[in-house]
Image (cartoon, rainbow, N blue to C red):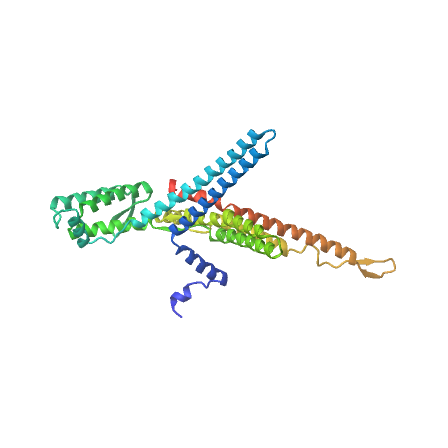
Length: 368
């Protein structure tokens, strides 16, 4: 066995399975998820509009007192739902366009490629000294705006530490691309800084896999319940309602959460330096809750105690009645603990959309 193998701790079965699943999840194209989410929102919006129109027509047909008030109430509910759905669609579209723009940022520029750019623009094949100097000035201006400094072997290296610096650097690099230098030293310097910028903006899922698993598990249970209702003769409507509830309240929010938690590289580095532990808040809450619940379920509440009736003549008989009462009380308490754990876990699973909103604001708007 190699030293590297000896130094790496062995992962448990569930940790290995979880790691493989998260690896597959990270490999999914974010734009594919965004497109699916936009289709779901469009379908829900269409159903909401059709349903509201049908409801308004039914109210008008019924007539009676308060028709106008009921019509306005139904119309108001439609407006509120439409605004919420449009806000979600706008948020998803913003994340998709941001990710698409970042993926378009390339670093594989060479002297030959810049010559092709110059030829397409009708410029001479070789850049002039003035153009090379202009490119160097732009690159120096870009580095000067990077405030994060690291000293290596007596030499200072500058890195961007926030989105403001990264945005300014992108604009300056675009200007260099437009000039298209052909001097190898200038091109190498450009590629070096472009790769730094790329590493700082490349995104990685930095959310809670446990929260995704929890919400997906609840969605699966709801769908299974819908299938059970369909098999037991409850009608196809119950199955459709279960699937819609699972998709709208859990699976779609999971997709939004996955997109929202794709964090830029410079923010990941900042979080690692500030808090080396990557143990998420939601993970901590769930693990503490699960640990406390398991401790409560395993606790001895007197259900295993033996009770005896002692008579005046010294005889002892097993007090089955008292033991039965204690057993029922202990089971009731543990049942209550289990129900509370399940209820809280369900509430945490439903909060995935709130965590998605928080991470969207942090990773796509304020970058903090």
